[in-house]
Image (cartoon, rainbow, N blue to C red; front, side, top):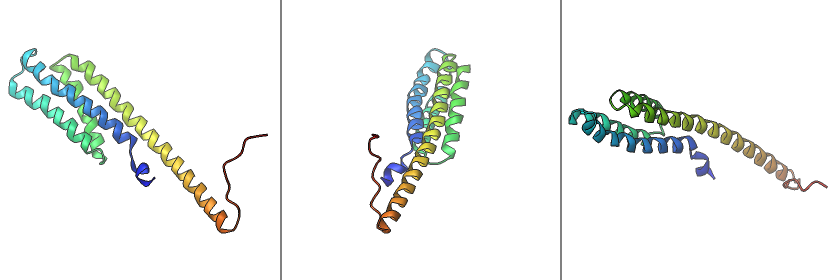
Length: 144
């Protein structure tokens, strides 16, 4: 049960967003070269650099600063729209997904922490009752 308490839904959701975004940003490299006539060196640095930043960021989400890196990647993806106009839309979609994953993940973590705290308190009260010799309190029965 202790391992289950340590799992972070926020980290999992944000890592999934960054993983998918890494694919999209990596695929912008050939688009920049062939369609937008960006120099190969620049396209490689920008497209693959953002792709690697996504992968590194998703692996580092145990650290608080990695979430800020995720937000920086979202801004960079939107700004990539200055070169590849479709990235205004795709970057915006990924920024929305990132914001939802981050916000919803935080909410789930808060609610899980409260539920585990309530469970721990109930267990402590039950253990204290058993120590005094009182019968263990079972789940409430059906209403009659």
